[in-house]
Length: 277
Length: 127
Image (tube, rainbow over all chains, first blue to last red):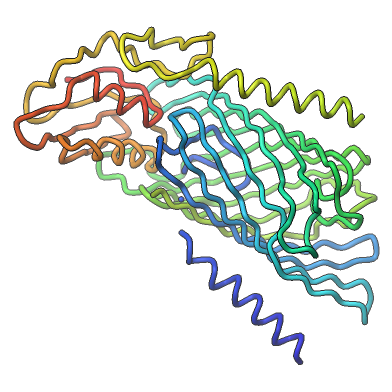
């Protein structure tokens, strides 16, 4: 009874934290994009993830609230900080249950626009690069105590109602979790390829009165870890983008999983919003 | 493997840092289409926008690269920060940005070009 109350309280804390910090756009839910707030402006983004993983003798239910703030340093450079608040429930047998609540590894990323060509009215093709690091988790029970650097390239093109994003990221794991759940959490390095396609459902054409736009999105996340684990997760969803905020809902559907070191993803749900200050 | 990984990461970091060092935004009289070091990060041709005040109480800018409602807000906020600009209306379909001025003093064309540039977009024309 006590544990149920404690769990309810933690879930409530996560839910209450959601609207507390309301942030850019033509961005997919998960795949990085070559978009930047103007110099001195900040976008704040929150994503609530509900995921379940099973395998390797564990059954893990996880609620994550990722809060990201991105500051425009100049027109072509941004600095982003992502802080994940996590409630994790590990079931290792009928009686062995572990509840963990706290802040997971914080991620700091410096992104730079390297190339851009604007074509037509609102068409744009851009290439960027980013470097960053996963910093030690403030909560001792989550993540690792190491600094794990990462670097990658990101591409974006928008043609009429179609948007395409791609990002390739390499994360060098200097330490890790001996019982990892998420890709990249193990003691091995992670190569991640993310692809996203967005189709503007509405409006068919923009006008001066356009207040927002609906998009259908489809994302593919391919993870390869140097321990041999690899998976492919398909994430379809919808995105509504207003002038100062955006709301997104998507589901994680695992398509290919070849995993030995971590449990497989059963399902996942993502609800997120962004606000431009 | 770790050594190789570290080398790849270092290459990535160098790539970004070199990008940072080689593409400072033009303030005036830049080439526009190609920044220093060959990276194209701006297309606004600043030579087309002299450091002279815009005539009239309103001006219509043609701006490309705004691909979404939030992109237009990014530019709107940037323009509205200018003390001489009181109103901004953006039509994404026609790439037009109509701005209304406050008072008798008007910003220069170069100032407007820099504001659009700083927001991350391309100023094509001022009418």
